[in-house]
Image (cartoon, rainbow, N blue to C red; front, side, top):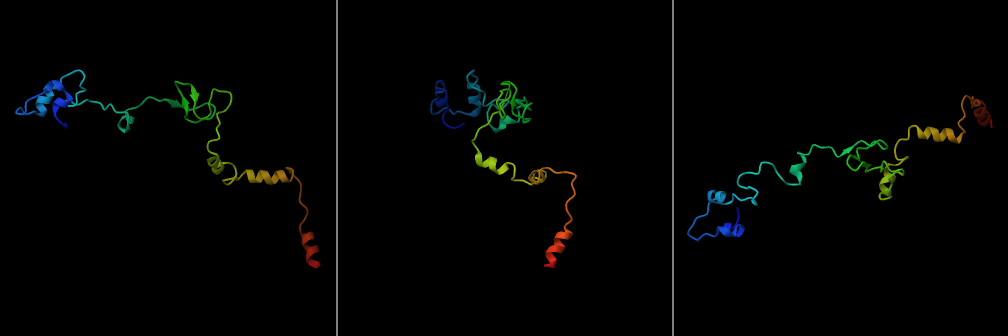
Length: 141
C-alpha cells in the first residue's frame, strides 16, 4: 500500500507515534465501499486480457447466407453480409485488398481453360485438320 492511510480514509488519522501496520489496516478496512484488497477479491474484475479466458458464452455463430462466423445471436444480424437484410452488405473501404485476392491473382486452373474454350465458341467433338500437310507445304518452299 503506498502512502499514508489517512489519505485513503480520513477517519484513520493517527498520531506520528502510532505505527500503522498491514494488520491494523485490515481491521480498519472492513467497510462496504472497500472492495477487499487485503482479503483477496477471489475473481479478477478487469475487462482486459485476464478476463478473456473466463468468457464462455457465444455471441456469434455461422451465417446462413455467407457462412462466416459473424452472425450475432442477440442482434440477429450478420456482421459480414448483413443477413437478414435483402441487400448484401458491401463497402468499398479496401479496394487494394480486394485487388490482391480477386479472380486472376491465383492459379485459375479451371477458369483459364474456360476462357480458351470461350474464344473458340465452346466447340466439342470436332477433329482438327492434320498439321502435317501445313508443315510439309511450308518446308518445301
